[in-house]
Image (cartoon, rainbow, N blue to C red; front, top):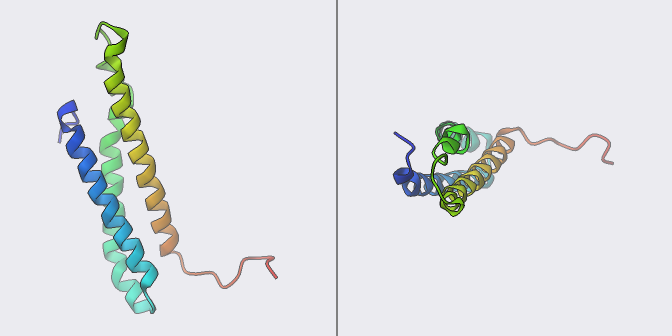
Length: 119
């Protein structure tokens, strides 16, 4: 899917939907009572994380030099503001997605009985 300016709202909506899916999975994972319940959610959990990585990879060129090249020759200095605002929004969304994925990875780890040195 091309990452032009016209796809920005669709990308944002898709990311928000994915964030809601990840939040739902995190809630389900936290509510599990047995290792079997936890294991049953792992495939769905991994799929959501992979989709999140794919989304972030697709967004990366938007914030890099590819996004900057579209700003050359725009004329007035104020003309770049919407592009910079959109890039900022996308960066914030990527950061939120990364935080969500880190939390999901932490949930995948087995619970530790006690922290070392904590007595």
